[in-house]
Length: 502
Image 1 (cartoon, rainbow, N blue to C red):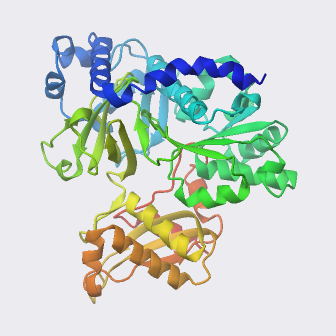
Image 2: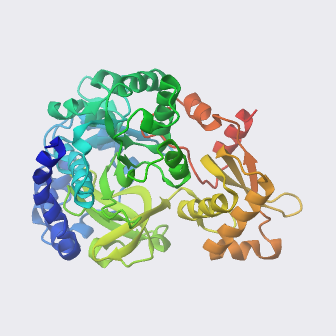
Image 3: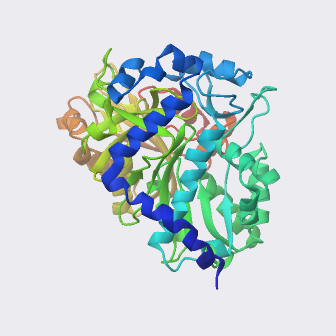
């Protein structure tokens, strides 16, 4: 009998609980809200905002305005220096380092012991529960899990707290029993230098029978290529013949899908998208036939949503989960068991279903191009790239895009910088197909492109090999959860990249 068959029954109770998402989401979310308010009632924040007297969602919504990182930063800094009972009860010792705000290079997000237990580790367990339910013949526990994580940040840590990528915090605090079925060794996983770590991970992992992968697609791809270099194998199945699953998140998988299929040429290989951020674990692709993810409604996270058309208003409308509608774009607001209260995380989602609540990530509140009223979001860009690749056979590895503002003749366009894993034979044709697909997906973009009056056809610039890797390295952002910014109204990122594109 396989180890997986022995462990499978342990996940069956949770599989039954997940089925309640379809009927009990409002009750589950209300219960989460009450637990969070109770947990923080005696904290500085809870006392100031009257948590002990809150009896309904309406009371909670009226208790405080929406918060940005800058709003919570003074409290978080005090927590990092050892103060107790500030935003969450007790002392919080771990802080996830994330990409910064307009005023700071980095954000430091509290990760309480409660959040590790009721959110982050629970998300990983539910991924496995959903996968086992969908794949009765799986032998996932009969080999090792290759888990790719970030590193600790000694420079940012204080005597009272440890700072690092969320994945490093998870590895640091993981149940020691899990280390028996994972690779690489903890000391390798926490190495700060990604290039050194990549080589060490590849050398350790290629000696094990790896059955499943977990990580950000771009960084996992780098490790996989190193494994192939060291082993001389033609594909990963020659190294890991029992490989069957990749749990991925952090960036959209669409640009990488064909690359993974080429490196893992197996009909038995499965892929599951997850939405696990420094702030919390929010979604799992519970149905392999449905690209949308299930919102995890019974973790230590209470959700609210701001319709995108309301976001810039002084007093925007804010909705609880049970008031959202399908096929509308919302900015995500969370309150968590780490003390992030009514916190705008910067991501946008669209619900495809409200029974159960399933969604797709559509982009970032600040990751879009709207220089001329075209309202292009990351979801549009990913779909248009997929169509252009489908028609040309190209494969995109990384990309970013920004507007070229009006010149003296009033001409303007979008400029795309694209690194290809497989180049199109005709780059101008690829650009034309990308433009056409974007027009078909986004009516605002199409209107601005009408007869080339406002926007000219977009431009695609081919990036040299490893350009984005080198740019991230120059920023000290290799590995972990660092991502290439996809869309921006500003030309700062793309200009830096273009200067290096030689």
